Length: 391
Image 1: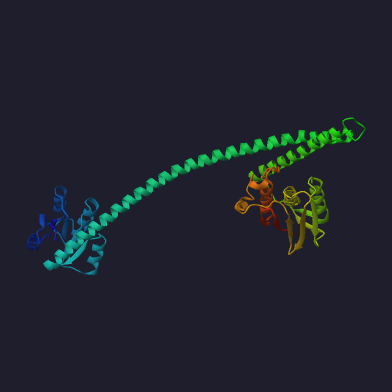
Image 2: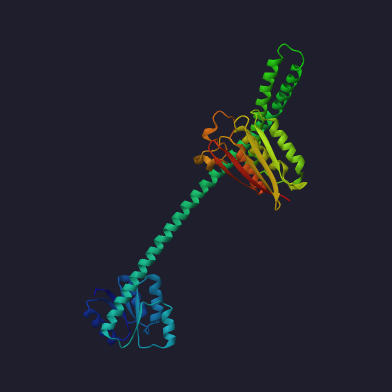
């Protein structure tokens, strides 16, 4: 049992006195007794109370229900109704004021004290819960404000990064395009030097040798610029699927002729071409990038004079390709990075390369809605499996 400061609001003086004695017997302090709602409000203005015992029928203009509504609004003090009436109409009015308890007269003192304690306990728990809710709402507001500010900063950073990436892409594309024209001129001049050297000239052998070196270097640089331009388009989301009718025989011949023309280490490409449709519909440029990069890589990373198998077949409206080499292979620990941009395995040694070829293959296959997998063993070679849906 704990001591409470209680205000009694009762217009029957005898009932008020009996209630006061019963409450004081249980060590509660009676702050005052009011017979009207107006007097009760005046007492509350001047005194702190823990709970109000409220009769519903009062002498003044304010009945107990109206008085309780004002107490709820101004003071937030628990109210226990005292009434001899328990009809449905009265109970409905009482419920609307969210009382802490409702006691029917005549009341049992023991039960009354229990009701008061439960009312106080309920009120304190509700206030604790409200306090926690308020603190939570405040934390949510604070966190929301912090997230809003963080999002603003992130948006600014992303916008800045986007602008930088756009500028970088424009610079790369412009520079790459700028190199293309002089490289073409250098290549033409190197080829002319080789033609002139075929005539009788005392420096014929040296001219041919250096002209060939120039041509080789220009082609390597040109391939690098082509790769850079490719990723410039990809980064700007300008890499599109542009399907055309492809004559399969001519496509495969041009592909193999081009790759074989660039072989310098005596590697042999064995082509095993199955029954293909005369024509298919897909993006020829993207398909060419896929197969040319895979075959060129196979040649580049194979030992001198070794063989490469290129198998191409058609099944269920899909081109199925295999590129098999007996080259250096890819270490197990690095196979997960094989399609990353600029990645080159540790065992490539002095073999030249940009690390872009397989990245281009993956990007092209994404646009073609194709797939690529591979098997590789160190010093024994690599096999790539490619699937490309066509019409």
